[in-house]
Length: 96
Image 1 (cartoon, helix red, strand yellow):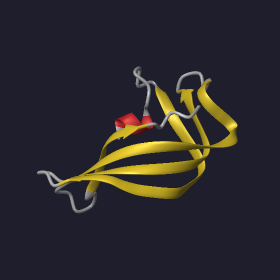
Image 2 (image 1 turned 120 degrees about the vertical axis):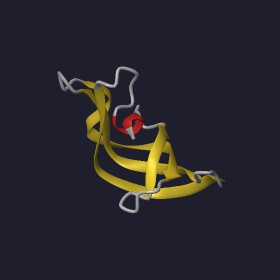
Image 3 (image 1 turned 180 degrees about the horizontal axis):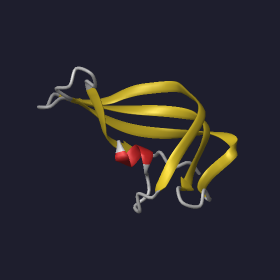
Image 4 (image 1 turned 180 degrees about the vertical axis):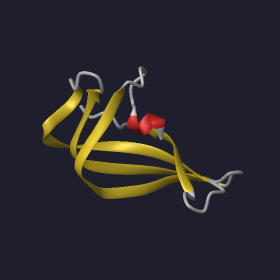
């Protein structure tokens, strides 16, 4: 989940997505485990940008324009019934 929320190497910059829509989602792989994992490809549309948490400077994307990113998420089945699937990897989340 950290890689999704803080997608840069410094981990000080955060991903912001507003007014999101997921018009397409595809299961691209299933690994039986243990623990089982599923890899999803999502097309995410919305206002998307990465900003420096200290200065609020926009490092990627735009605060005013809607864009679409193709993201790959890996979810792992957990033992916690309150949170059965956990995002363990995310790629393609930085908007252009």
